[in-house]
Image (cartoon, rainbow, N blue to C red; front, side, top):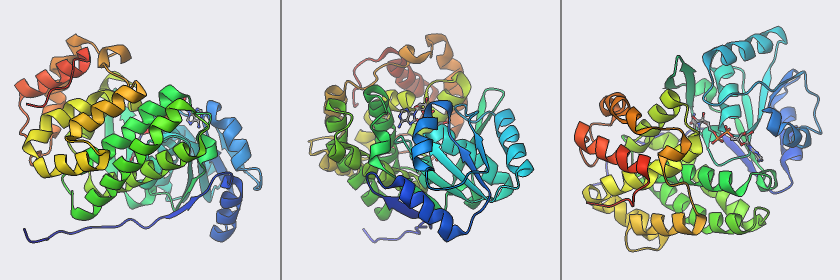
Length: 355
Ligand code: NAD
């Protein structure tokens, strides 16, 4: 088949290296010529942030980070940035922390250096998210893409195994969904395939030993690839489902992605044989689902939405919100019936079946 596609590559600098975060951040602050810096880090991330910012002077530190960025929290952080005439934001933490920095950048255009400490990948995308009255709104804006990302695998040593696994599966979901998302193309699919390979190689090492340098390096490298692929390919069915579940029922982000992913793969794979072959190849398995299920077994990955606060009674409402959001060109057309079946299986944690 003829290759015809349009592909945008987002402009961003990535500095990667174990034990190098503080040096990389100081170099970037100097390169950007910033003088009034706002550090954003959740209370739990403060210790890591102190290491990362050891070589620079901060104007203000902001710790009031809440998952899914409630609009009131975003407005408060914007006020603090304005009152302190901030010219650079440095976020140190997971996707929630990066998300708050993005919320400030969205209305102010202040550049961000993102030091990421999970595998959520928000730092590599131009997507922002805000939550108001239990509805999550997302959008795309060039101003929220961090100018620089700093990855230091050592900063992830403290991420508990359970959260590392869930977050790693979140990254894997970016890769899998990129195979059939609305702007999937050969370039983002290639990034996604390499992302799957790296995550599948790194995460089992992390699960065995959270301070395994090679495992942490591969997982973080894979997470970046996954996020770059996702930023380029856009949100497919999997992300549409998870954003509704996270925003409406306040479910934990990474665990929700980890739980839903095999059901979406089982749902779409028979209708997307090329994508499935690509995913299978990256896992070194005979099918995508076989590769994913084996990795989930090795990692003891999250299994059921009912373990994370989603109830059976929530399913009809969730289906009605999700259904209109599923991309029209999803490999398998979604209906109320098949989406209900998918969410019911994910709620119960029953074995994902491709059919
Ligand atoms: P999170 O940022 O909420 O972090 C989870 C927990 O881990 C927090 O308590 C945090 O303090 C802690 N933590 C983070 N790094 C740690 C470390 N190295 N050691 C110990 N503890 C650590 O969760 P997340 O999964 O990273 O991010 C989820 C959020 O990111 C969601 O709101 C999601 O919507 C958003 N997100 C956005 C995009 C995007 O493109 N805009 C992409 C992915 C995720």
